[in-house]
Amino acid sequence: MDEGKNGAVSAYISAYNRYDVDGMMSPLADDVVFEHFTGDEVVVSVRGKTAFRRLAERAAAMLDDREISVLAMEEDGDTIVARVRYRGSPRGGPILAGEGRSVFVFRDGQILRVTDHS
Image (cartoon, rainbow, N blue to C red):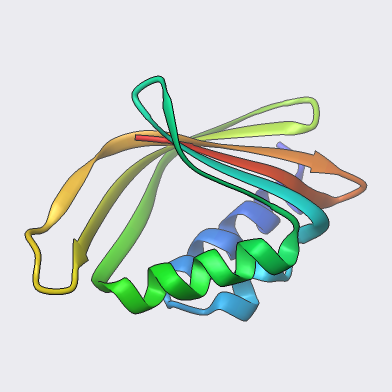
């Protein structure tokens, strides 16, 4: 596995777990695309680093607790698929937990697309 890509994904997830929005932004391309699917439905979609930052800041403010644990990562060319376990609690809400996958597509060493499936 490409240590640069693996390191970028690990840095992104680690920053997410620390509520470190700047750290999440660091490995992203300026024209990053983020999509979150629940089942087959896109429930969140943003394009560009500015829109991504706004989304990440809102999400961090809305959650009391959150964590992503990587169960496995597989690389195929410019794509890394991470099988993940997630846990989160919206402010004042119940703990949500489950397993899913996050797909990271790279271009020129940066993350161009993040697609989460839960």
